[in-house]
Length: 196
Ligand code: GDP
Picture (cartoon, rainbow, N blue to C red):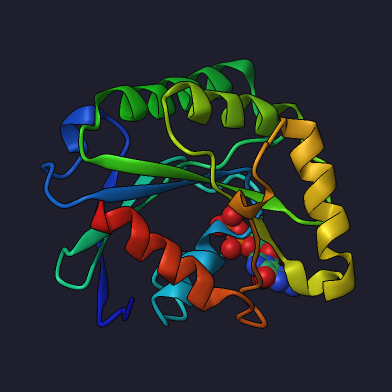
């Protein structure tokens, strides 16, 4: 899969703000700071298409990116997992994700991002179960893979697989935005998804 161009299509909170359904969409979910923006920027060869920041409390929005003149779209779902976020905020987040997952007919896959170094937390488990219950494959991108040696990837994939009950470990893909590790693999996977 070659990425020729990418543009921000829409920033949405409510359903009425989603762009009209068109090509297939692939959504990305994960806790804040897991590396979602960095993944998007790496895949589309842009430094700042998606905002990256290490500061907590980014606005909670659903961001739609149109790739290759709308051949397909990437959808950046709002991150979760800030301890300081109020109950009300969490509920808002849950509703926002639920509305999207339950109503979007063009959504082909939801990919979960996890930091390769850490065992999945409660929110990650919840998100994974949610994704599976909606009938998606449960593809996991294990981010920041440059932070551990390649020799340890298998072990960390195992920890993630056990914690979430992932049967097929091929569905867990180590990835590094900084070192561009497995970029092609993720692009091939996207190609497979949009071909169906
Ligand atoms: P988001 O909140 O999920 O969109 O996460 P960001 O993409 O903004 O990344 C959060 C932080 O992790 C930033 O400081 C990034 O530079 C860093 N980061 C993201 N991806 C990688 C990676 O593959 N390797 C390393 N070492 N750091 C990364």
